[in-house]
Image 1 (tube, one colour):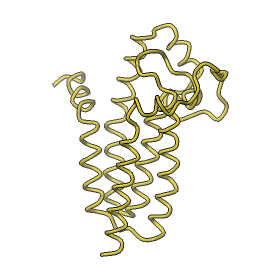
Image 2: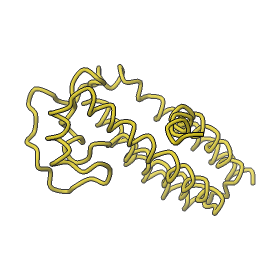
Image 3: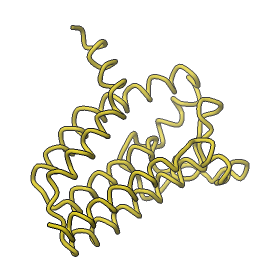
Length: 184
């Protein structure tokens, strides 16, 4: 099996693997009051980054360089990484840490590379210039790009990008973890 085919499979299964990992995380979880509070704080941070990104994102219509895209080319994936870490903290389980690391180290490099290739195809010159100033994944604390007054956060764009699924998934996971903490 060639690398391309393997990466296609990884890309296709990225959402499903997250769902499978969430279910396994709930099974392996050993939540406490303190782990749930710590995880919840990180969850809010991860969701805030994803919400901010989706409220600026115009998928494949133009290269988004505003909002969190001034700090990292992949704020959605960075926010997802924080959500993954928040789940590890909330679940307080070595098994959940192993699941997170496996997902993050196998899936994210493939997905980030595919996104980079797609943006390079759609916006070749603009993406090349953009990538010279903005890091691929881990954000910079001093953006090199000016704010784009024509592209501000929009709740309508947030809804169009269906980001509410991440919020709903996080709420469901925390409800399950709270029930598990109370019952077990």
